[in-house]
Image (cartoon, rainbow over all chains, first blue to last red; front, side, top):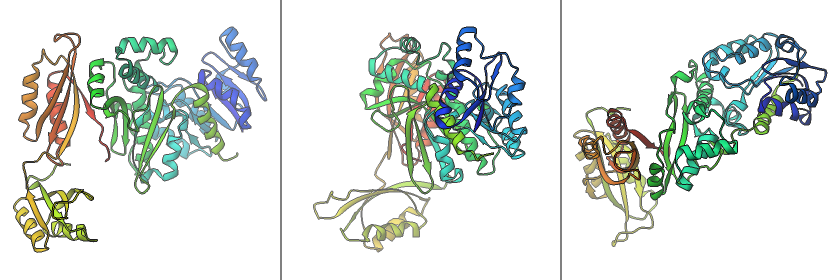
Length: 318
Length: 174
């Protein structure tokens, strides 16, 4: 497959670097300022240029969107509300009957029905495994069972919040202290607001709920429909009291056809959901096959890029 | 989820002989008399002095039909050891955090207990930064079988009104 990649952050860059190993050619890469095209693109040269000058190239975004790719990989930062520019990039590719693989959560969390409508009009397909749980095959597992036979999906879907909670519990350190430590380690971003206030986990929950609802003929949800609480106000005393009774607190996202709820919850300390550090876990409850637990790395460039590239591998040839 | 007013929850302690099909035979009269089985606690391997197996069941049934259920069980030869002991079927834990002491913790607990379906069975309080700072309370609450959801709703309402945060337990299963 011939890939065009929009977004040259950790994920976009990793997709560009790992595409060859998966048997694909990269023919374009764009960042926020410009684009680099080639047939195939010299990925190392484009990335070197980006680290030296801040831009991968000086071609126009429109040239990249109009180039001869089979798959557009949309890996620009997730935005709320109108989900731009990710939404328009994806629609531009679908309008040209090309496949789209999203790493950007915005289009499927905020405008699911619209992007699905554009997909129905297109000969291209839309995949978005990388938007939920990074390397964990959450969406695919739901699809494989059939979303109408999945009753609920819940789990730990944000590694930063999980790192903070597990360190607070293990070391008895305050929220602020652990968060600063996480930032130093590169586990938390400079602005971790969406990780600790539950927004990021809620977006993932909304995406899963949309898949479950679509299979039942229900309208899609967006972030504003989710019930969201974060971990910012949790004192360390709460974690130590829970620990005295063999329990701990995790930021749990729950998605069902009825809706999405994210918040700190009491769980057994040694239970399945109490993963530690930056691990994520997705628990899928099925109608006939019981419960499945999938854990792994929920974020990171190569991890998320691997999910993008397995999506690419599942697309029909054009 | 709201149950009709006329439906009540009951618990029964039964003793069964250790024979195949015995449990099934014991449960049939419950459904026949309009009872809805909520849970069965089957202490297999734990025998009574008479060599029988104790079983505890929780049921919902229309008000006034509970006596029929017991009678139906006895007609089937099932030993009913106890019916409707004062019984809190579901213990669960919640964390409360915030200005617990400033917002009068004992009044908060009284309010929670005033909701007739909940009892506060255990409380641990941690206020490492002093009573005027943010503190945490860990509560073990009891609710009658099947009423945990309503009990949690009540705790959440009370906490919301006082600006406290509730960390709820995650249900073990749906």
